[in-house]
Image 1 (cartoon, helix red, strand yellow):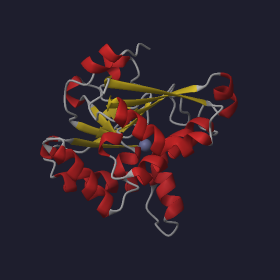
Image 2 (tube, rainbow, N blue to C red):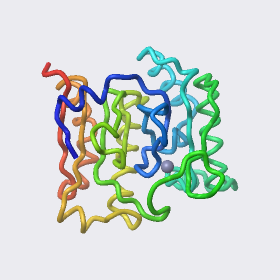
Image 3 (cartoon, rainbow, N blue to C red):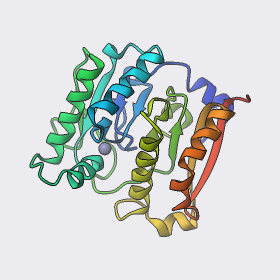
Length: 238
Ligand SMILES: [Zn+2]
């Protein structure tokens, strides 16, 4: 792990070309899908208004949304959250994940095929690690929206691309989901992180943005304050 301002600068040189789940086991298998946007369940938890706000944020960042590749993955934890919020929905976890990816790709006007990531044979991209266990070493809150996590040796971290978050409420929800996975029975757990606090990198284009995002997330962090170590990093000193 080698995080310096210089490294972050060279890891944020290009605009994103894909959407992956924030899950650190779901990562591109080729450089043409980098950098990518990390987003819980590729946006499956959003209503149509949030989807539209996200698409607008990408357009505002001068991203050609028609060239974004959307991915979904098997056994997505965000789809479990979706099912707990929609108990009458009889679709499977994978059906919900695929539906969410299709909705997002349509909203983006994407001309790229939707890719499936996972552990079974018919996946376009093989997921890493154990399907039942998370081992993300860190959480990255990326305010630049351009971070290539491979270039800072943190490809297996949770990536929350908050440059394009629809609002602060979503930022809190998404960060809470990541922390609960890490601290819960499918992650290294609370005990582990009490001994070895989990770094939470809050990366901003400038100090003001990093401060602002830290402030928005502060009450989520408060619930895990002995298990995490928030670290603010800004490309420009402003
Ligand atoms: Zn997922």
